[in-house]
Length: 61
Figure 1 (tube, rainbow, N blue to C red):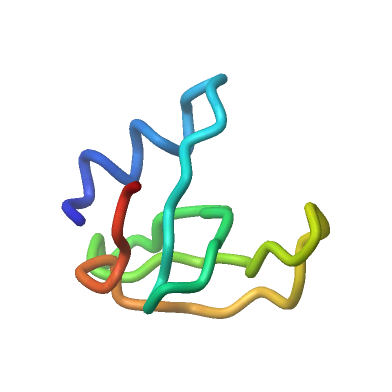
Figure 2: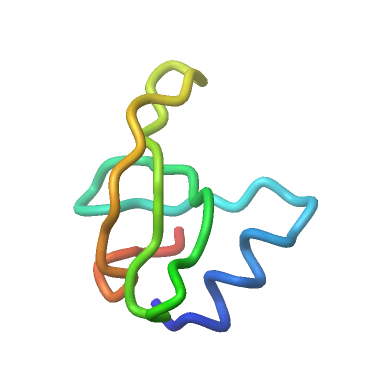
């Protein structure tokens, strides 16, 4: 995924499904480097721990 799309998803009022290596996640923020983001896993509609991931590994469904 590209940084511009990550920004669009973060600012969108719609719920957009995104996966990280097949796991549903919520994008909290795009880091200043433009290559990584802080995300949380989604499990039974509850958010999990925050982690930093490469945005290239994010997949919009």
